[in-house]
Image (tube, rainbow over all chains, first blue to last red; front, side):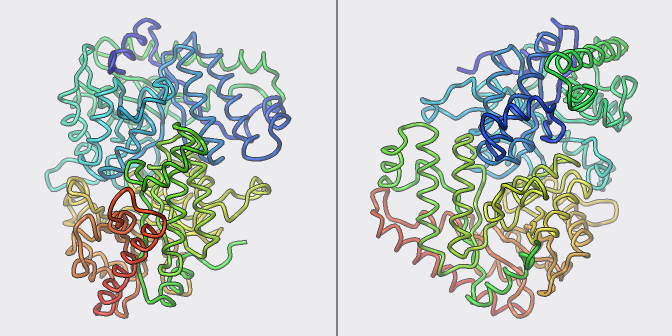
Length: 314
Length: 314
């Protein structure tokens, strides 16, 4: 039932494409090309269902443009949740569509809660435990999920257990890419270590029993490219942890900043670019072909940049 | 548009009922009375839609039983998300139903993300900003939302701004009720303070500009009853912060442990009991009337217990 672990599939796919780029799909209704919004409104009206359809159609067009080029996409749940049940339904339809196109799908939902509630989030994102799953299509779930460590390891364990059982993956927030990340994550403890390092140690401990053939564990870490020194330091501390690296592109980090995310041989990291790719078209009146071409060109350019960064890693 | 702030409405309602009990609705499909599950399956089949309908019918029955007795309910989002778009639709239908019955509704979703993503979560849970809201019913949103502070104050600010603009509330995780809470939250910093206190200071600073007539701010804190010493200490540090207190009942804390959550006069805290109330019925074959009576009796008993605890606060 488990199948090949997510992280091993991810490593193989990155090697096949020689490309550690993950396209982030963060669809904001007002920024979606007019032709997509109009089609969605024609089908469903100017309501939550119409908005959700626009997000799906936009996401599917991004998937079509990038599926041959990149190993993975990351879908930001918040933008879909903004349109209620219809939005969440669109999210899961898009997950299924991206998987059918051969992409690995990371659900960026940053969940975190205790005990049975964490298990319910694992049900929601990674797949139900048998026998409740009898009627659920295993392909309708994500390959991996982002989670928040603030509640401690007993709140992460239900996610780890489920990921290991179903061949899925996790990325635990360690050092995020935003300006305020330092407020709590850089606090120095009596031990002389930062809180982010403490979170990194939880990640390492939780993943130790779940290392796949690739040498990486099922429990990855989110480490932003906007703090390159922390990125390089955490990379050295966590040799068996796969990194999901936001902050590249629109958030300001370039290839030089991301380089520290990679282990020698250019392994161990997947770098996310979202807005710089999905909004690469010139105006909201871009037609379907211009949209596709602009997204594919931006993804190709970022991929070349990151390939070079990964090759430089020592 | 903003109307009366959530926290002021909450304080008034607690005083009217002389009762600081919040009923937690955490519906696990397998624990729902058979007559509800059967009705849902008859209507929708043995699938996600049927499961979602069972959660809604169960939650609505809890609401019917407790609406005259308590000021607020807390809905745990995870259990609904476990059934995809249909589950999330059921969640929002239940929010609307509970509000129509006069209850204040806290969405327990523990969200946390950066910048525009945090704003999208605020759209989802607290209400869209105009003019996107033209087609959305303001009553379909929650009165308040739980959020996670790990990403820092810039990640919390979009939530605070929206809550203040729309008369809603927030509860930021400070010290959670689970066994592993200590791992990160009790870490002692170079300053000699714990991480939880650092989070408490963020809460205080973010709320300072948003104090309502009740004397409490729009930015509350989640502090578990399972760590009564921390609860009392944080209570003393945060005189303008309303506390949402989990851990009472099935998680092990009693009236003595919760007492420290209250300010003199018994103000300033809402105590959550979930499983000890919603699963108070004797067997899964309990009929509608036994179910209603058992839930109401458990809520009444907890309310009396907490009223006494609040009165003892000095």
